[in-house]
Image 1 (tube, each protein chain N blue to C red):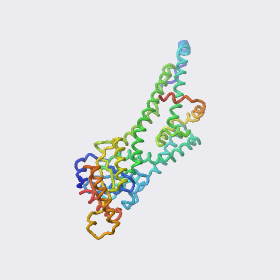
Image 2: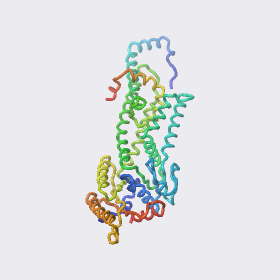
Image 3: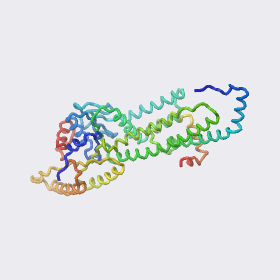
Image 4: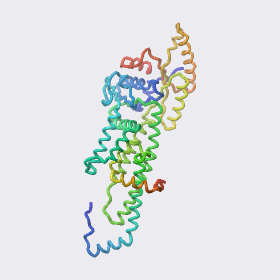
Amino acid sequence: MSEEKKKKGGFFGAVKEFVYGVAAHDSARFALKSRASMEHLFILITMGDMLGVPILPPYYSLRLLPYVVPQISTWKRRMLKEKDLTDGLA
Amino acid sequence: MVPISLSKIFDEFPERRYIMFGGKGGLGKTTFSAATAYYLAKQGKRVLVFSVDPQASLSDIFKKDIFGKGPTEIMPNLYAQEIDADRRVKEYQQEIRKKILDMYGMEKIPDEIESYIQAAAAEPAMEESAIFDEVVDIVVHGGYDYYIYDLVPLGHALYYLSMASVYDEWIDKITNLRQQMREYDQVAAVMKRDKEIDEDAILNELLYIKERINKSSGILTDKEKTAFFFVLTPEEMIINDTLKAAELFAKFDVPLSGYIINRVLPPELKSQQIPEYLKNRLAMQDKYLKVIDEVFKGQILASVPEMERDVTGLGMIEKLADKMFY
């Protein structure tokens, strides 16, 4: 795995940051946001029984539990705010 | 009515190594499982008979406490096993807790997560899934010529099968979702020129789960290696239910090998001095034996008489096996 390379080039580094900021930052943000929505959708359909919606057989959903521990509290909050998550299932 | 011989079926299809008896509760599935295991073991085959039922009765039939003890030798070549679902679930919960603590360096499982782990284990489907999962271990582990499933009553067996096909589709769907998520990750990573993203551990878990479920349903529906026998008795309701169940099983692609009639009253009784009650029973039996003969033409593999006492212990099992396989 690569270490932090950001600080390497002074001038070129600054140009690179600038170009990224102008051209790609928004798209990257969008990709990450979509990713986050899907993450929540994913937790809903695997861990749904936490909200009283059993979907995955619990024996196997337990296998996934360790990976989503950090997301569980934010997910519950989000579930109360948003209603259109199921759009992503189609 | 002359049944085709059951032993001939076993001789003709030696590659059918997974043997299952299905039928309504109390018709003799466990008895036939034990007798078949006995017969095959006497033929010099290494046999494991195991119970898929949380309320298993192999311990009773072999008169030996084998519950939760792994494969236990009953006689040379014959091993029996009753899965302790409860213990398996507990061990599994512990495994999950440990994984969470290790992954995040926590001292204690957060309350919300702990209560989820406990609630999940209390689900009724949990025990069944745990047994289902252990069966995969047993079969993958190998070491026997024959595996005899002492199956649960019909409803449950169907539940297993439908569960398998539903899960399969469902897991495909979430696996796709997971893969899409990974693509978004990659897009974001490329734009930000980040390091390569880690392998998706969740995706790997999903693929593992899919493989497990496919493995167990694959055995139930393997046309070459699996033989599924229905047990029935000469009674109207049983015949009707068996017909319905057979249709359903066929829908799930379970390879039906034939039918075995159990609890047939010996016809020689008729020539003896018997009470009216027994005469009526015999007349009814004759009627339904004819019905069975018509309905399941050419698929009756054995007709097993009602024994003089219940079948427990190797002595009685041997007696029954002689009547089943001739």
